[in-house]
Length: 482
Image 1 (tube, rainbow, N blue to C red):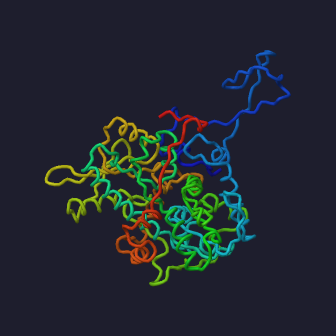
Image 2 (cartoon, rainbow, N blue to C red):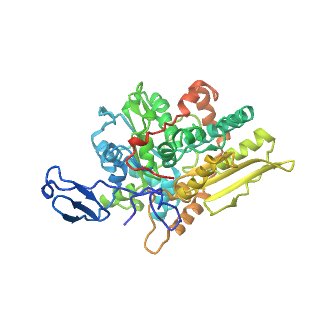
């Protein structure tokens, strides 16, 4: 059976690290009929002991489901229980049918426009599952969502470009601030696009780690702002009348979409209303008796006005998680040190999921960047940072081993196929996609000018950046001791 867990929780052959640092819990229910009122009960590993009667009861082993994970307030994939119903395939199908949705505030809203935003990682996962090319999978996904009732199906490259450009500029500012005040918590700058990592940092390290995390929004949330603020205006509907669905590689994106930071009181809605993953889409197809191969494909929509639509799915240089380290490294090398042809030569450290790249100028190392995937490597990174021994200026941090292509809600390997083989297939597929270059994107330049009042404006900072918040340990059911 396909795993329903986030990659941060899932033990795979990709060598992530979970125990003994972290344990997963589920409340134990003791039937009242088996104990006296006020009786003292001692809970053990295998059951409980009723002190008053001297009776020992064995407890059955429980299964931890996705609902338990999302409803728990203790681990890095936690969220309010409302996510189980508001971020589900059942809810999505209901909205398609009724053209109404109830937001996380309990308000029911009429839907005038249903927008689906496709990210590349789950699209490639679905392509591998149904043995399609990335372009075929994209068009068939668009056709499938349109058959359900979607009005627009969009590619997310524009949001990824904006997120990368903002991360580049933020790093430059942090680096310059560090030169002015070496004691400030400017560097290393840690990537913020992985919600599993962000939630872990908020719950376990609080205000110590949070200042280092980039404030630039993830592509999902940039796309949310673009759809609810800009596209709704173009289509002459209110933001609350737009039901925005993102197609993503991990369950933690459901948690990110539901953050209060991404709810606008003025617009009376979230930026992203529902997150659907590759595994859930596979289930939707199976339950309806459909095979994606048989769906009639259609072109993606291009509601942005000027210019022809670009290729359906594109990649960025660097990792399949978006290439943050590569883009920021090359930009910093050029802007800070005049290196227009810096070489991206990574070397593996403890394992292939922890890699670093450096830039030397006049025989001196001036930049050191890293990619850290999986919680074993994140743990090492955080501990070095706490001891003041982190040598890095920037780290691309992702909770899942091998990054987003191995997201916890990607379609799992078939019988006889290993996780490594599947990830290698997705990486090879990703490398064949047409290359997107954020700085050359004319639509990006137009959005900065027409929508955001310029790249350095207050509006651009408000729309494209966010904040993080330490969570009191007393509010956490599970204390993760790392």
